[in-house]
Length: 159
Image 1 (cartoon, rainbow, N blue to C red):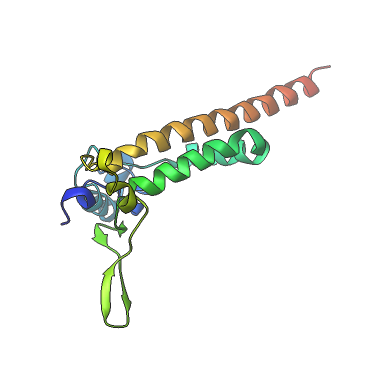
Image 2 (image 1 turned 135 degrees about the vertical axis):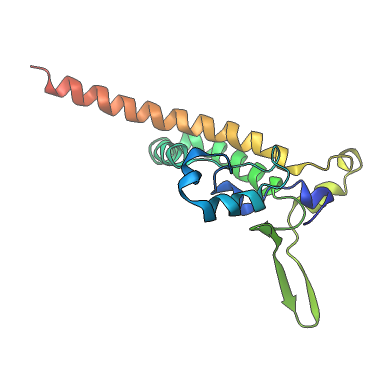
């Protein structure tokens, strides 16, 4: 298991896999075990966004692109930074081989670690709170569009 800043970074897979205690995962023990392996630090590493919120956010982006694109940008940047200095997927560092050199994939958080006032921060996964905030705003756009469609449909049905 990785430690330090990399250990306290979000795993890319954790954005797509619910927390191990999710009741749905009781029916899928293999996915539950995988979730346990990628959510090692538990509080900081659980970053699951959810299917319904993702669909509503997509609806919001589709119908209110001009207003919502800044939230997509904020969420995307925070999501990328939450992955820490080195990319890990499935609890393992992703490594690439270039000629005789083998090493991890360096992410933009590595540059932030070089700033004097940020070198104390070793929990990049906490940036997922910003991802969740941006997602919440996008979900609100999508839900507003969905509710507007429901109201319009009801009005059309009334005589």
